[in-house]
Length: 178
Image 1 (cartoon, rainbow, N blue to C red):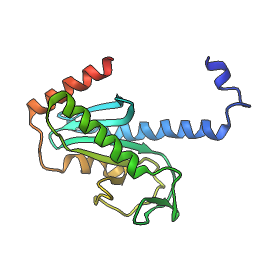
Image 2: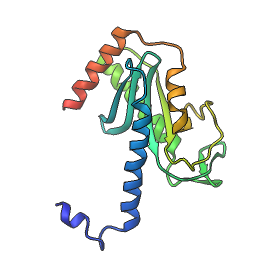
Image 3: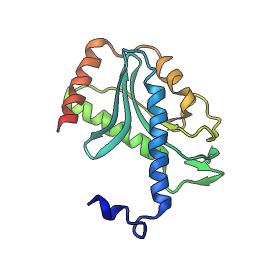
């Protein structure tokens, strides 16, 4: 059970710290998202098929699949993947974000027989994370600091009508109950 998971011999402190930072980062992202206008619906840690999406936002400007990272890094892009201090990350975050969005798109298509565009966002919650991509996507993914989150989500043009957002919300609420 829980007790042996926290045995310090089996559970390196670095892993634990990463987990805590991740939680804190997610809280900071959630705090930003909670300022969205009331037409927007926020789902956290939503499981679609075998994938967990940190935050899923549905509102008039569309559907956003958000992956939250808490790294304190200087980000770059080498033409293929994101880099930290010019070195690639251990995992390809752009692929990760794109694949979550495409799984969600397929899932909604199966359920509603419509293709909805999903906007993948990689948000870096650490205020010392540096990036210079602005609101230009890299390989379809918006890579942004948390302070640009609201701007990115609310300043697009309205593409979903109320009945579509209701349809999608129904499906997601059913998904969460399983």
